[in-house]
Amino acid sequence: MPEQKSPPSEMIRVPVPLIGVVRRLSKLHRQGHTIALLQALEELLGEFDSKNDIDLTAGSKSVKQLEKQLLKLESHLASQGSSVETKLEAITKKLELIERAIASGRLSNSKGRRQAYPSYQQTQVELQPRTNESLAPRLGVSPQSLIAERENKSAKEFLSWSRNRDPMSVGWEWNALDELYHPLR
Image (cartoon, rainbow, N blue to C red; front, top):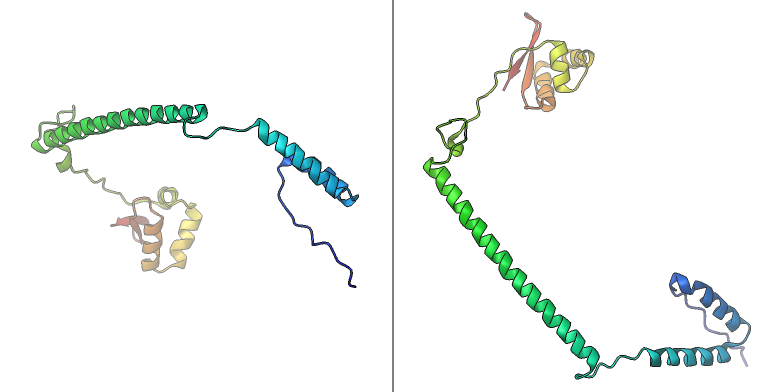
């Protein structure tokens, strides 16, 4: 007759506060106290469950309290919802009035500008030619590395390289006659 082996143990996760208790239970199991241990646990769990019973029948006190809380919450949410909708409607109406005022030219800034905002055009600042020392910080390099880039690249490559590094995407071209970098848009 072949010897019967016990099934392999299963690994389970245990809440941290119960780890010590589970270890003691495991030790008692290994010592052969399994049946007594199971009976004691069943009694303990039964006693625990009987003390924490909640009556969930339709007319019970607990269910009525839950229903009351839910109704209170629903009415609160309903009142909040309409208040938010009202505020959004008021904001929408004010925005429409502002848009109409801007479009008709009635709204302008306090500096006496006669044009409304949408037709305002920003004046372009004309960039002046620069030296190695003044262009290098704009491109985020040292003057020496700027010179090295200029000398190691073709004119077209340098223009592309400088355009990629410039904060306004302006390309810079070297002019050997005046020894300055000139902006190219």
